[in-house]
Image (cartoon, rainbow, N blue to C red; front, side):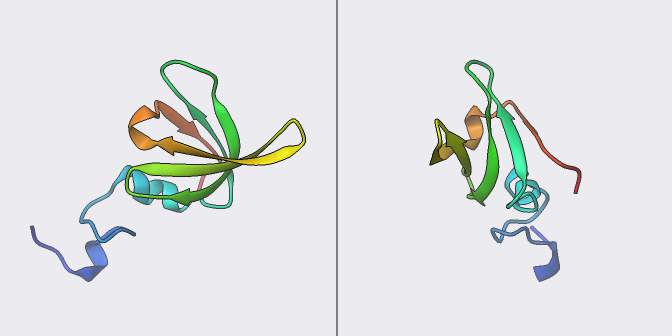
Length: 80
């Protein structure tokens, strides 16, 4: 592996990763789609190496939804 400090993503990995791309959407509204099940829409709060956290309102209550990245099919959001 070659490259300098500037070639690392937000988690210290080299190269471009999905988590790194999502990092720039923190604080913005996104919709997460899965192969099966209902989509989840809300504000992206956090991105980990293998998960993301969405905050949404449901039945007037706020809730946090933790989603494993390997369960995600498509993520839509604003252009960065």
